[in-house]
Image 1 (cartoon, rainbow, N blue to C red):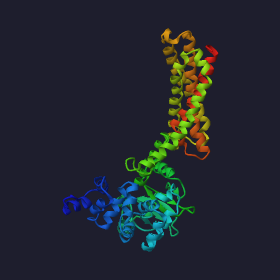
Image 2: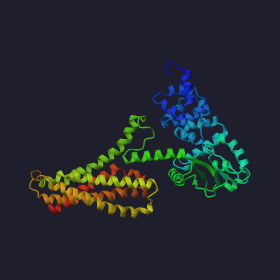
Image 3: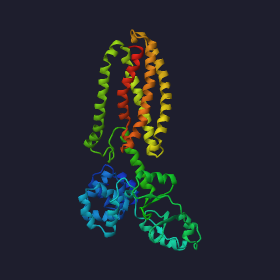
Image 4: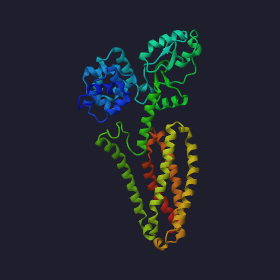
Length: 442
């Protein structure tokens, strides 16, 4: 349609499809081509479509337009969406734009941008429906009709007093089904789950999921309502946090952009940093093997089982680290649960170690004698089984303890990634393996 200058088709794409579909259909186009499509839609429609583009593409699109168009578009966007966008732009550009924005929106933008990026205040919207408790349902419906065009959602309505203190909440369903002359205060639910404006985004997600609501109110230190966080924004937070954790667990610094849209150099830098650290750490494995060179030379069969034993520790440690990190992310494990976690993983490590130790004993015992050389097969089998069991237990304890230690030190538990745990257990596993071998065959 762009090539044929099909104005009717481009207008239909820009106006008739869901905003998410428009963003999807224009994937792969240049910034100029995307604006050729979006220019067929009114400004209000453009403001709905823009947040569905990936963050990096949003910045390129907003920077690829004129200053006047940029400010008008920002004014039309939802408060939380434009705050997210402006937080990614160059601060100097934002400061040059704000004087051109209407005063009401300018104050709202500055307020939302003042909150820490990881806080509830940074993802909340200030467009919500409110009612006083002392009016009737009939009056409430009239007020809602007036507020609806400027509210992100009217399914949850917040009941405030004159000082904007949160008294309770009422749903649109309750108002529709209630008798017209009943007071709103008689319908409202007084026990409302709230979050503080400075609480983390993860806590907001847990609160919304726990109480199964469409929106959660955000209050300041005095209990005044300052905004709400809706379920769609929380879903974005959950997806982003899960993505960041998975990337950290894979020893990759989190990517802001989509995988295919991130620059090659940026991806290289975020991957090379951790890989370089892990590679340097793995050099200790070489040093440890060199230390036991004489032992391997005297009983050559021991070297055959080194990969088997040390990989067991890495795998068991990665399992434990993944389970504990995810449980911490979901709020199932807190700092006070450290000893419970370690006791649980101690029992689990022993059980898993015995399981793998039996398998290792059988495998070592079945090794042909010509491969083992002068070594006694039963001695080798005992070494392998006990080393596998001990290394599995050690890997499980390390994998479960490191995320807890990292959080106590103020780091993201996901930094205790599977490669990090595996590297640490590889080095120490070799030490355990050869010391057990010294008891039986060296």
